[in-house]
Image 1 (cartoon, rainbow, N blue to C red):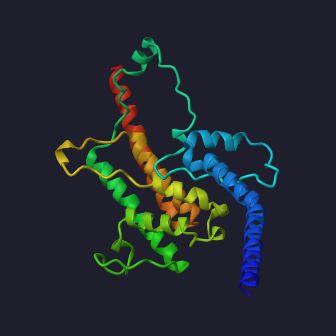
Image 2: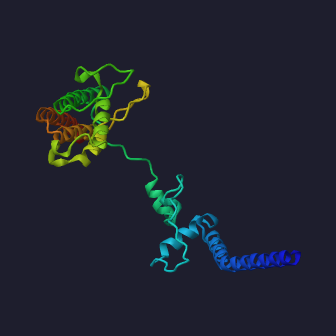
Image 3: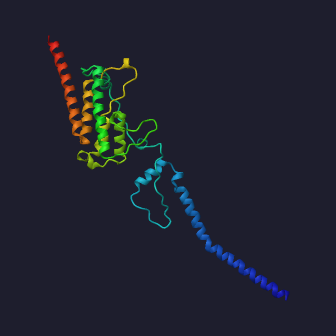
Length: 265
């Protein structure tokens, strides 16, 4: 009886050892293949390589990799603090000294025929017309005006300066709240640029340091305001701004002609 038990135990031990060897033989190639794939993935991972090297390889790849064990991964996004100027670029040759000297002289003075007070009055008049134009446009199409804690509700055009109206219209346009069909020739893209051109630079607080702008600057602001009124199809504002432009231009031309007459004498 003990001999039979010993034989049975030996047979069971042999079967167990044979099964273990068979299992190891079956799983060995799979485990080795996984290890090789893991090593290949780690060696080809974009994390273990520089951004420039991987980006160049991804751009030069013309056909998809074919193969059962091919490792595929997507190109990484650029870091948030990098842009196209951090990639391949070029620098232009420095200008030669004569060219630099010719372009580094004192800036020529542009003609100025309006006093500082006259310029302020012209721009205030233009801003008043544009504020009324914006108020009518927003009310006509019922565009929303965000409420602000430090500002009262809008009850009339004068409750907001033209710069504030222009900012509101710009936000409505960029947020696609203004349909293109309500603008002249669907000029929704030109609308934002025209609004920016119609805003005068903020004057300095030091009144004594202020100097009059050149004639072209004042005329350009009034002209840009006229284009704003045209795009929103406000005929009244367009006529008023066009008349303001003509009056301002006539004053400038009259004073310029007077200077030329005095110069000939």
